[in-house]
Length: 418
Image (tube, rainbow, N blue to C red; front, side, top):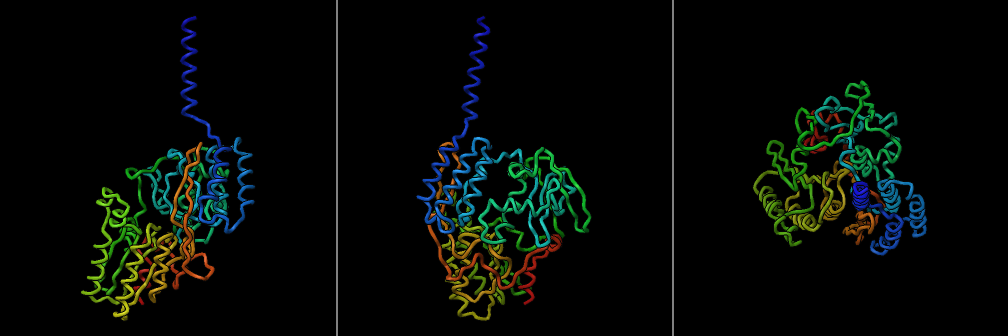
């Protein structure tokens, strides 16, 4: 009898511990909190739709929340918020993503389709293949569904977001595209030959990741992760500047983060090097590439463009080209508009996912029960009187997978041949 009593006590303790670990989220409380806090904190949330539509949408989610998983509720909240027109405001459902429920894929949407650029060793044979369908569902159907999770300002933002969403098995499951641990991909190679491939869920890390290697690496991809770099191409008299992040050591210091600042490059040193190169070398064409720049703080870029514009006034023979693309967003958009305002630059590349006029300066709060972060905008930036949803380049050039595989950047090739 005593042993039985001890067993019951142990079982009860386990139940208590497990209930604490697996604490059930009070979504009703979280949704009520969201209904109050987001409109109060956001700069102007109801510019596209009214408050009634927001509250009705929240009530529908709240009434069905007991039957849904946590990630299903979070995705429905994100879908609702995405429809209110601010791509900076979102529900961070990524906090609920299980790293063990991700397809080992890194994808890129080229002009001719969605291609696999990275995977794990056991799936190496599918590198460089185009995805046609998932579990028999055409890619367009999947894209249309996943696109509801993004503020659809333009097609560029869809091309930017879908490759990141498609590998998330939990998201695919929420939309009913997969049900099991194994996923059937219909693939197509460069010769147009199709095949079906069964892909298992697996975590892809830097250690086990395998890359689709092109014949050579185009200049724009060589330092895609660097904050900013420059190359003087003496052969073509081209000075190529790549500005991938609106951030630097100086901006980190302004925020009081001395320790972090030491790990970052100096924009002041970069700027000094740029103007020294311009002063001491023959430059016929100056390229400022922002196609991979997702933002940060626009102030250093604006000051740089102002200084560069004055230099070009006295050096009018130098032709200026600004490169933008689907990843150009937020503060990078503001800097792109600085070029439009102050220079005669020719814009080349793809449409931007960011809008010239947009909300920004993001802050966040957490929902009290789930702890999920909600990002919201505190400011509105107006840079044009035109009603446009993107910066559309003067010369539209989007790379194909064939271009990538051969080490060709059509943007740089076009500029070089002008």
